[in-house]
Structures are given as structure tokens and as C-alpha cells.
Image 1: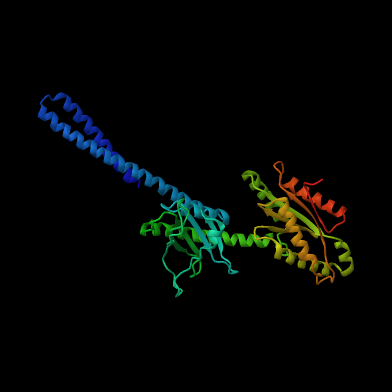
Image 2 (image 1 turned 180 degrees about the vertical axis):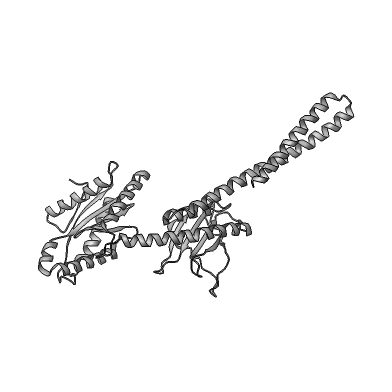
Length: 383
């Protein structure tokens, strides 16, 4: 590409020099025939200069695009953070000419695919089921085309009309997942050049995604509390700081619940610490059953727990507390034989909060709930 730019620039410079020489000659010659002849040559050179200028502009644009793609590919391979790798992969795929959205679908051990998307809503992404041929073979690419009935109106160009999916290679013979681009333009189809470019990206992104996912899985094991299987204290404070910063930056809502078991010391004294640990483990299992997939449940320490609620208000936190309380107290805990009740402090992020003050407000509300009679939640924003 650099050689082509140099060649086009040199040719353009030669044309300029020749044109200047001819203009000098034209000024010195007085005959009409000579002037007409030179003028014809000048016009031909001007046309050629216009062509070379267009070629040069196109070459520059292609060079810039190639540079951007190379930078994307380098950045993808240079990160071990799964969210960042997926984000950069989607950004690179979305830069494909005609692509209005991109999707990464990864196979997972539990059968529920990992999905990352750009330009699609969560509902749109969940409805996209990309699979290979029915005989189990691995296709090089999958072309997607959607046709709509006359009742469908697409005045705003919101409908997906087509797409292109290519497999992402992993360490094993089975593909890691699929990288897909979609177009909302009616009549747009992806050709061989598009397939080759998407394949190049998938080949670079696949190993980077797999490495990042392995790192995340290893990190998650280190972030889990051994007794309850919930996230541990260190992970809680790191995640809370990150979610607070994100919510403050983008002016988003963030909720927090801090809760513990009422009279847990009495439980330990009555049945012993080993049985008390079993109570905590069973409690954690019931909590997992009722929190949303986006919520982050953690064991902060002892019998104290916390749930971070992205995109949530104080009311959302109170509703989640009620679901947790119902799940825990609706039937006796097997290890103790008795029902267990919870007290909680619920907070919503304020503009002047940082992670420390946010947690402190929820924690102080928990103590107010204890003082008010236990088995209840108190909002940090209330008096």
C-alpha cells in the first residue's frame, strides 16, 4: 500500500511538471495550431491529474482503513480482559462496510452461550441463533437473509435484512463460537471480500477470546468465597468501585443491598459453627435463586452479605430484599431446623457518592434496621 501511494504521488508530480512546461511553451509560441495542439495536451494532462488525484485519495482511504484494522487486530491480541477483547472484536467487525451491527456468540460449558453485541438490543441478540450445517460439519461462512411481509414497515431502517457469520477457531477442533455482522440496508449482501475480512478478524480474535475467557475463569475461582460460592469480599469492593465509577461517568442508576442473618450468633451457639457454616451455604443458594443475572451477590464477611444492582433504584433494591427474605424465611433452613430472617440496608447511588461512602450508607442503614426490630429493610436515603 505504501509503494502504491509513492507511485501515484510520483506520477501526479510528473504530470504537474509536464503541465507547467507545456504552459511555458504555450506562452512562447504564437501560432494558433501550436497553441491548439499544446492546449489539447494540457487538457489530457489535466484529466490524467484528476484521475491520479482520485486514485491517490482512494489509496489514502484504503491505507487508513488498513491501518485501523491492523491496530484493531493488534489491540485484540494484546489484551487478556474478556470484555475488552469482545468490545474491540465487535468494533472491528462493525467497521466492515455495510455492517450496522455485530454479534459474538461463544459456546459455554453450561450450555448457555455467552453473547456480546454491538448495535443490537439484548432482546435482538438473544433471538439470533447461529448454528452450522445440520450434518455437523463446519461451514466456512453462513449467509443470512431475512424477508418481511407487507405488514412490516421499515420507514426508519430498523429491520435487519441480512447478515454474515463465520466460525471463530479455538484450541480444539470444535469452533469457539461465531462472529456475525448484520445489515439494516435492504438489498445489501456480503460478498467474498467481506467473508475474507471477517475470517481474518475471527482467526485473530478466536485465540485472544479463548485466552481472555480462561483468565476470567481462573480469576473467578480466586474471586469466589469457598464456603458459599458467592463472590468474596475483595471482589465485592473491587466491583463496587468499578460500578460506582461507571454509573457516575454515564449518569446511570446503581443500587446496593447489605444484609445479614438476624441472631446468627445464637444459631452458632445452639448448633455449632460447622452447622452454622451449612446454614450460610444454604442461605447463599437461596439468594442465588432469586437475584437477577445482572446482580452481583457477594459474601462480605461472616454472616454479612451484599448485592450490587446495576441500573437499579432504591425501590428495586427493596423489592429484591423482599424476594430474598421470602426465599430464606419461607421454609426452615435444613441445617438449623428453624426459619432464618434477614435485616438489610438498601441504598441508591447519589451524585456525591464514591464506593466507600456508598457502602457506608447501606451498612449504616443495616444497623438501623437491626435497631428498629430486625427482619426488615431500611433505606439509606430515609431518615
